[in-house]
Amino acid sequence: MLFSSPVFLFLFLPILLLFYFTIGRKFPNLSLIIASLVFYFWGEPDFITFLLVAVAFNFFLGLLIQKYLKKKSIAKKILFLSILLNLGFLIYYKYWVFLIQNFNTFFTFLIRNLTTVPGYDFNLSVPKIWLPLAISFFTFHAISYNVDIFRKKAEAQKNPFSLLLYFLFFPHLLAGPIVRYHSIAGQLKKRVIYFDDFVFGVERFISGLAKKVLIADKLNPIVNEIFSIPTEHLGASVAWVGIICFTLQIYFDFSGYSDMAIGLARMFGFSFPENFNYPYISTSITEFWRRWHITLSSWFRDYLYIPLGGSRVSALKRYFNLWTVFILVGVWHGASWNFIAWGILQAVFLSLERFNNGVLFKSLWLPFKHLYTLLALISGWVLFRSENLTKAFSYLQVLFGLKKEGIIFQPAGYFLQMDIILVMIVGVICSIPVSSYFRKFRSNFEVRFKLLKLAALTGLLFLIAISVASKTYNPFLYFRF
Image (cartoon, rainbow, N blue to C red; front, side, top):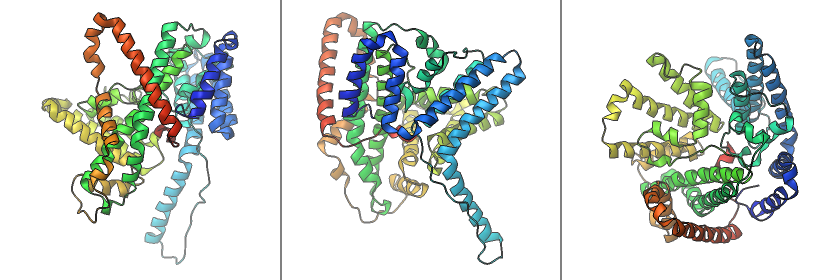
């Protein structure tokens, strides 16, 4: 069930709000657990049992870690078991087919090149495994929960229903943001919903919905059409249109989901962390990762990079830690060599920026650093969007004029219709913090500002309703991960 679907907007959410703020207020956690189970069952009925079993595992393992904290060696073994179990689920469902396919490819290569036995061949059978929705985010929530208990940053939850709500709460269940247990433990126990918080939640939800429906979804058909063109029939100008549209699409799709999740959570009394902070204004890839998918990058920093030694080690070890983290960031996004290559590319840029303690990079002209960052990001998004590495490298060659153009199917003007140009302009404007330029005037025009905001939100709702009523199915991009 998409947040932007008519079923959610006009059925699920209104019924839930009406129920929660009448009868459901007497048992708030149970109300949200039932709603979350219905929400997940709508999209993945076959994996409800798996999720419940996984939550039960983490509930009991968390209690065991808490019990043996004074005996560090035992607690560490239980923590290791919990990480092993959670990663085991993730590897089986998300990566097992990919691993077997690559093993077969590698083994076949060795047999053909090393053996002299004619007709000898061996391949493992490739199973059919369906990827459960939200398993990547679920795994990271589970690992952080148990690690934080071990680190004494949180106490194990003794109420299984509270822990169930933490894991299955529908706003962040499918695509984040990654919410650490200790940050909302108190809210799971008791929370007060103030009118201003509810209003903020509604405003944030509408703004996120507008990002998704009015920008990301409008660019989706153009991106799909351009990336489906064989690269031998793709002109450089069309390639640039395609990747610029995707650069805007992925940002507004994912940040739109995060905004909706944050808004929905606030409506029910939960405060979720921010996940995006205008990443496209960054002047380095290092800064980009402080602004993009903040809860993911901070998760890898706190639970992998720092435990590996972080930056408090030799230069060689520091680069090793950096590459390890970003290759795994790539792997986390999908079982594909494209994502591994994307992670390696991020590591390359980050390493270059840190070379000689970043002295050379810091001395560069600021506009040049911003241009470099945008080109680096765009190159990475080609890997992110392409079906395979061959298509990605070929697309990059066309993009930067390194490949001779064949017969061009369509010129760039064919895709740049007036409505698409308008969406792209709005997307670029909304990618920079223009609102901050007007904050100093807000106190002088508070009443007018509120009226203007109300008018803008009303207008957005009208446009969203028209678009939702007429559009086709457009899932969130990050549902794949």
